[in-house]
Length: 377
Image (tube, rainbow, N blue to C red; front, side):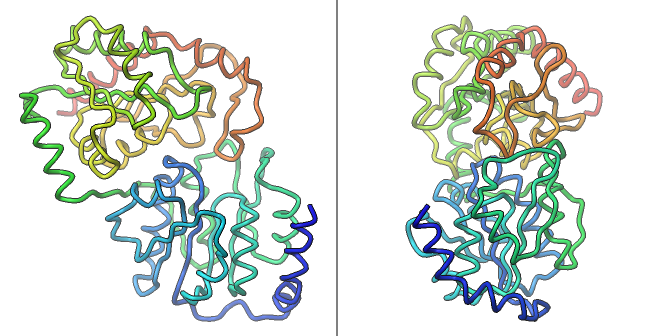
């Protein structure tokens, strides 16, 4: 608490000057500070596209963690990416790049403090509506008084809500298409993998499955994922590819242990880095997962998805369209996890919700999606 008070005292002159400073100065350099997880960063990419489409002359800096640097690497809308470990002085980096405007999609007191300390003329932050967020700390709410606040509604589609933060800059957009890319080297590795495994992308039906969520509270039982994999192999003669990061060994192996058609289910866990994983996922015909980062990668590459939502609010972020299906818990419920509140929830109820999703429900949604895709083809 003492540290926070000291920090505020340090920037008091800047806060005082902001009251009288003109904020309609010309903009040349813009920073978007998104410190959330992988899926949230993917859902922020429509903002990058909207910014560069409206003002291609502006230089766009994205500030985030090292993982998200890899996920949006090769994105042509971004001019520079800065990895902020939260230990370094963000204000120095913003000053060095002469940032004229900062956009902070989610409540983040450290990002707001650094922007104010740097004396950035225009700062746009969210103000949570229709709910409560633990990220809106007392410090954040105090500092927010000195910047432009834009309502961000919980329970509504987050990518569209992020776009509303651009409106004070005169940028109006409702295009929530996500944008990712990958290197030629990554594509070559993915294509070589399919060749080595005798998989013909044009003729074989290739389905990706990610059984890990990176958050135990959202994970669906491994034996149910195995049942879905066997169902896809038996009914649709699918080649199933299991994906997962370095920390997902145990989960993916448990799925493998429960699979009957092991000759048609391949384990790629830990074999592809993030750039290569993007290329691999982009070649799937369908992607099945709980609500986690890879499903948003699939969506960005127009891959049809089955999102097993569990305890999250299915209205806020999961891909939803005729090509993107969600499977929600049975019966009336109150979602437990939100984009702006993944900390405060009823653990027992969250687990009940994810456990209530049956394999039958996932199979039905999968059948419906495949039928739809075949009718369009």
